[in-house]
Image (tube, rainbow, N blue to C red):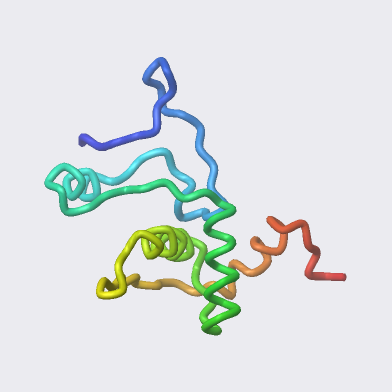
Length: 115
């Protein structure tokens, strides 16, 4: 199969890390590669900090606790919204359950839920 991978200067698969276990992988599957190639999908970077901030924001303002994977999309949507006009809209599909990620977010913030 052909796909896209994060690579180092020698072309070897680069080590990656994400607070999200579902995004902690150096490549994308062939369908995502194809969607990118035909211009139907664009993949953009979002840092763990941006995703955690989006997770906290949506949880606090809407009472929706998104999965960390979805929080990455929310973070990019929040960036994109700043560049849009008032007549434009963004649709973000939020999938998964964020309640399972609350402990990971607390650890990321250096908090102990057992205090």
